[in-house]
Length: 499
Image (cartoon, rainbow, N blue to C red; front, top):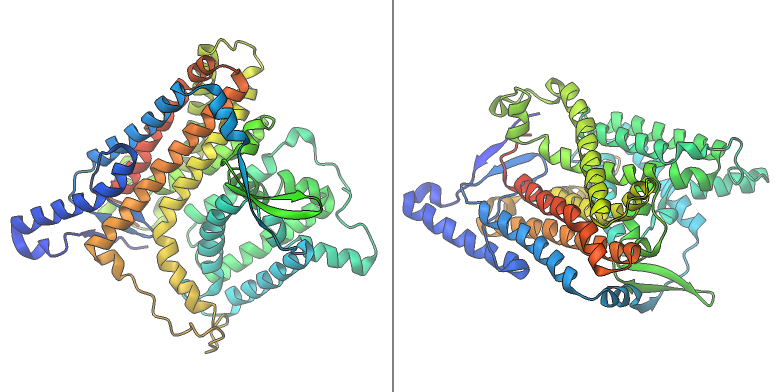
């Protein structure tokens, strides 16, 4: 791995101090518009994205302050609103359109066939990660694009996972009830631990392992993952393993819980319904401790992904970022760093919930687990926002490579969709105006995610504690933690990175 650090000043690099000042003024003006939507405090922004580091000699304190004030203002606004208003907002819904009937088994079987093609492409097509369809599909389309799609339209994974359709075919061929009933009961005490361990392994493979984009290695890893879960589904039963064992099913389920759009069945038909994001989580039962930890793990992994590339982290572990030796030199320390990030986030979250319960006069010993299981849903929008802002550049750049690769999946010179000769461009990353807009969008995403988290936490508190006063008391420290995490997220977008 190589380091790419660019002191980006555009034409200012050729025009002296006057040009530098002009660039700073122009960038500040560009950033002002979007951040002003939140709290009327604007700033120039700095970006972190993909595998490059961008450094700009621009002040970043203003937009950190603006983001923090935006989140704080949202909490204060909610605190003075009557509880009845929040409950009415939770009940509101809008039926948008009738959804077509898509057979789940057929869609899943098609997904399995695509998965088989991707494995073959990883093994036999070009070894170039930017031209091979497998890594582009796994890390760009599925991990980034599909996650964001879930965040808007709810859980689509039951239709698109590669196991359901295959198992239906096997049941039809054998005349059995394969995977419908468990051969071995998955212990209730295991909770979501299997999914958490599997998700942690996926995160480690992406963030820490030596070559997560290497097509043959990724093909083998994906095949092992598929076969392992296929066996687990047969042993423990499809419903139970997909609910709390298979990492992607659990992850996409939680992402879909805060989606504003969802499918609703009425009178034998399925409709697309618009509701307040996360409504089902507000009125639902609290998550178990293991499910709570799974949600926290999703935020910890994407946060460490950003932090592990910063000059700050590399300095802490004794690595010169300007002479970065590659992943092999930091694999062990980053493994412990990933675990430490999860432990630290879990500790801080449970501490804020515990102190919030004390402030709200909730002294029951069992209340901590229940309150944490309720409030953790407010972490999901923040995790999605970190995910979107962090991978936005990946989606914009690698999405172009995917469009080219999909026309020639086996590197045989095909042009199935007329895009094989597409020349991906990154020129927008060398244009100051476009980069400033991109950075502003990333900033707004992070701030909006935290505001959504604040609002969701407040509605959960109203539902749980009954009165606005107790709800606000229970939230004070959690809201403060979200403000701090907002600043941290914006700092990740503005600090120099290596990679």
